[in-house]
Length: 398
Image 1 (cartoon, rainbow, N blue to C red):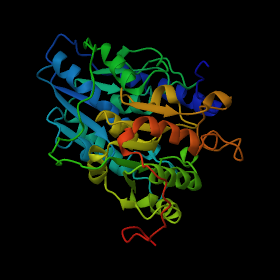
Image 2: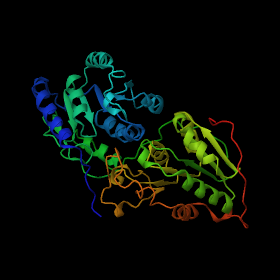
Image 3: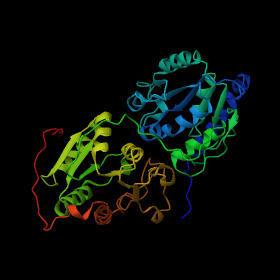
Image 4: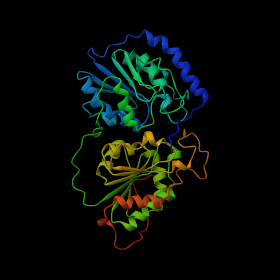
């Protein structure tokens, strides 16, 4: 089935064009640097979430090969500090919570700190970036690169395979319209415009590998959280799947989530076997849990991309998201979805037009268990099926 583009309201499309036209005179005034001159500082701008920030890693090595004396700076949310603070390829991470990258009440005056944004622009202008990179085709990022004085500005002219299309007036190096391919490959393709050789690159692990010791038991890690509510899989389905795994396999099963996902984990905990462990994690804890697991079950989410970056075996359940872009970039992964049944997919995830029979509900515990059975070695299969009773867990909110 051919991939569909995301359709934003006409007002959004028109506003993007108006913003581009409004800032184009300023873009023309900024002197363009020839790339055959020494490039000292490169800024990669990524205002959005965990999966987006993780996808930047694939660009670091090609950029360093092309511009060996250049510093690489990132402008991301604060989570960028956790992911890349020990990465020697990144010189500095500038953290900022962008209002348009929030999931709700983007322009709420109570949380909108324009003064902080202006202060950030003043600070980063002093760094005098030679190159600014936008990997999303986002007119807001392109305006920001102009305001920061980036002399070379490279990016796409359509916003993540949507109908929001611009003319590239704010760019010095136009990568054209972004194609519906995996997000890491999208990031590689944009830096091709800078003369980077991009063949056979794969992101390095996101955090330094540490010796975690030998694991004597096969571990299945479940992460039932997702950044958007329409990506969630119902608790009763997680319960049915987890209980079936515990009954049929002698493996350790752990269910994890961040603090905001605690209520979701509590609901799952009420119905699963006493053999299952639950844990609330920080980002650093999350990486550690993923690295020590043998199989990860998750949704279309940031943790999925962390698992893929470490080449951990994983099964990801996809619903409304654009799977051609956001599928895991890994040879050890598979996805389960039924998007071909839904002409509304992929969608903007603002509302669901089929709430009683949506694309996530189309995924059954039985089909997920079938895939799980293919990925757990037979040596861990139980010779007899056992039922186990539930137990309370102390490390979750009550």
